Length: 336
Image (cartoon, rainbow, N blue to C red; front, side, top):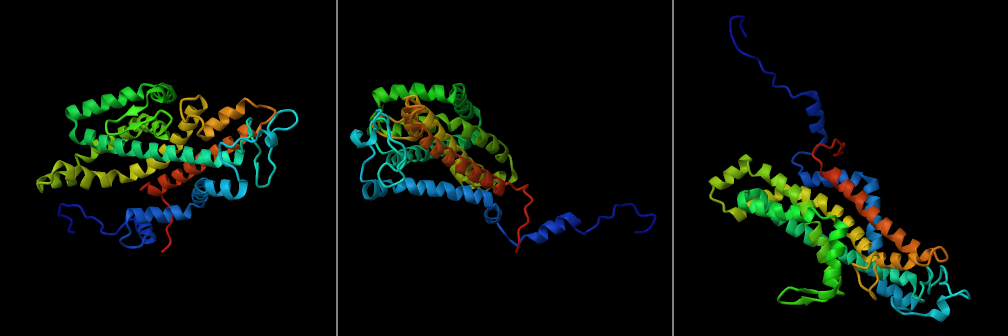
């Protein structure tokens, strides 16, 4: 450029840091494929995810263990063989029947542990499904339409959010345990596991719906949404065809977090008698029954407590790994 010319000379060379980062990635790799490669390199998260899978598989196979190994059901009482000379439940025998000992009325703890896990995991999964479906729909509708729709949904979120989780859960659990839930086409009995799942699912909707709403408020002002409107796409097409894929990462990250909290909440509600109703077993009811036998029969509370901790720990650590893998700011070297 001559000395008398006025202008600015721009360099066309890519900065060294960006070039180095770009050389690490294969051409055309998508965000979810990249996230999967990042997750595969997180051995700790995969190990705890495998632990959770093993625990789920054990609970699924509970009938096989009860029928073919222990030869007893979750509610079968055998006081004559399960209580010692002092009238206390026996401890672990480490063989087929009463592998982990018995409870105060002669029921096999190992069998009840697996059946209780089925109840806890079923409630957690159903509650997570309810939370994620309704929170996603309500969050997208509130953030996209704004105005009266946003005002009504946000006030409903804040009303639920205003109550402590366990206080609201206990209140709803006691009421619905007495009256059940009439949904018009069918009625759910008060002792059904679905009652507890619905209560927990509804309680956690604002905790997921509000972050989704905030993200949608920013997305609706982006250029690709304006382009979709210019093309004549309807509201439903824009919300679930354009906006939903862009909040999918947030939804995926929330799933393990909500699942872990739902399982813990079920255990807490069942512990105080507002969750799973007898004779159904859950880890919360087993802890509640076992605490009355302390310190003579500590295994009756310790065994379900350890199972609950391992399950929630496995979900949380794996969920943290998923969150890190989906984080676009993560700097993890990916080999070709």
